[in-house]
Length: 343
Image 1 (spheres, helix red, strand yellow):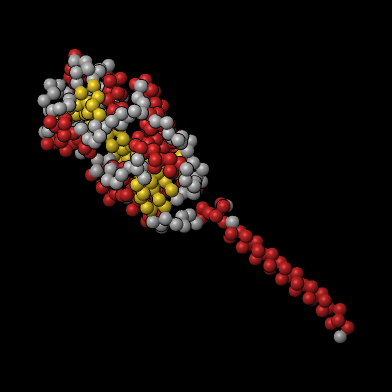
Image 2 (tube, rainbow, N blue to C red):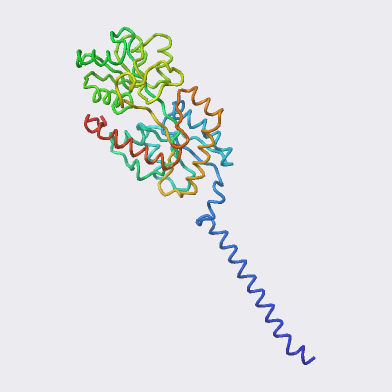
C-alpha cells in the first residue's frame, strides 16, 4: 500500500505527459494540413479544381480551335476539367490584361500569340508587360504565311514579283487585316527585305474575295486560308514565308529557295500563366501540353487545320521564353521604324 501511495502520482504524471505529447503532435499535424496550400506540399495536390484557359478572341478562330483541341486532351493528364473562356476585345488586350492580373495559382492561363505577346506591346499602350507579367508554359504551333497574288498579275515567281514591284513603285496593293495585324507586318517586312514599295489596303475581315476578284494585287496570308484558293487556281502562290515546306503543299518554294532568304513570318501560339506561378505548377502544365501535342490523333487534327507543330525541344518553358524575346527583338524595331501605331 505504501508503494502504491508513492507510485500513483508518478503514474498519473506519465499519463498526462503522454497525453500532452499526443495532443501536441495532433495539433502539429492539423496545422501542417491547414497550411499545405501555401507550402511545397501544394504541388502534390495541384490541380484541385478546374483550370481556365483564356482565349483573347471570339470563338471559331485558329487560336480558339487549337486551344479547345488541346484543352480536351490536357484534362486526361491533369485529372481536372480544362475550360476555354473567350474574353475578346481590343485585339486581344482585354483577355491578356485579365490573365496578367489573375492569381498566379495555375488556374487561369492565356492562349497567347504573336499578336497578343509581341505586336500589341509595340503598337498599343497596353496596361501590362508582355514579358514581365507572364510565365511561359509551352510553344504550341504556328501558321506559316503564303505570299499570294491575283492570278492575272504578270510575275510568275518571287524573283519576278520583286522585280515587277521595283519597276512599279507604289502602284501595287496588298490587302491586310488592319494596322498592326500579321499581314500588315508581313508586308512591311517584305518591303524592308526587298526595297520595294506598295500600298496597304486594310480590311475588317479577310481580303481574299477581293484578291480573287482582282480588286487588289497581293496578300501575305495564313496558309490555311490561302492554300485552298491556290489549289483551285483562283490565285497564284509565290512562296511560303518559312524555313520549311508546307506539308500540304511541298511543291511551293520557301522564301529562302525563291531568292528571299530570311523572310520568315508566322502566327505562333503559346500558353502563358500569370507571373509568379510556381515552377512546379508550370512544369505540370507543360507536361500536360507536351503529352497533348505528342498524341498522334491530336497532331493529325492540328496538321489538317494547317497548323505547324513546334518540335519537342522547343516545347519547354525555357524555349518559349527565349523564342518570345527573340520575336520581340526582331519585330519591335521593324514596327518602330515603320511608324506603326494604334489609330
